Length: 198
Image (cartoon, rainbow, N blue to C red; front, top):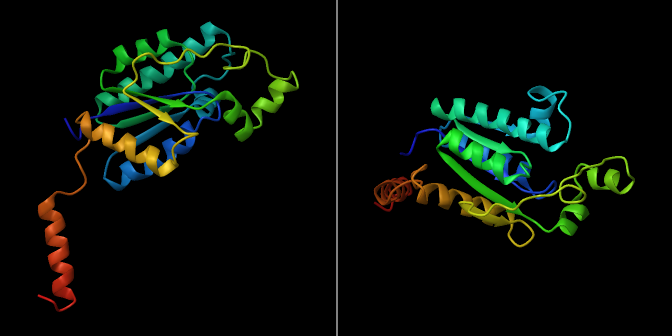
């Protein structure tokens, strides 16, 4: 199954770390020679879902558009990374059915930690009353019931999180482990020979 397309579907509150992890995973997958596309929530809303608001219906429409694009690219052997909040379980399950090769990863982080990070200044705007219906504050976030993986970014370093994600992708058969023992032995032998030990 390795080298087929699949979708990594990140879900979690604003500020949990979805975009940060997406960027690192995209880079490392590309280093492995994979075609990768990231559908970040903010970018999708600027281009693919321009004009949509934040009602439940509009949020579901946004997620279905992301899911449609992921399904299309996944079928063509692209690795897709969706990094939208995706607050509702029903829409995420729709995406899972639509895409097929689907790895849901819950980027779990307490609201107070996300507020402290407030990378985009959104929680400040919520507190000032300038943003309404904000996920996790005055609009619900439905935690995934059976994600393939839960990453707690307030308890794990970025490197630990990335390592766990790659280990899960190997376990599920979407990626091969990097290098095998023969390759490693060959590399060591060549290095020792170059240094004049062999």
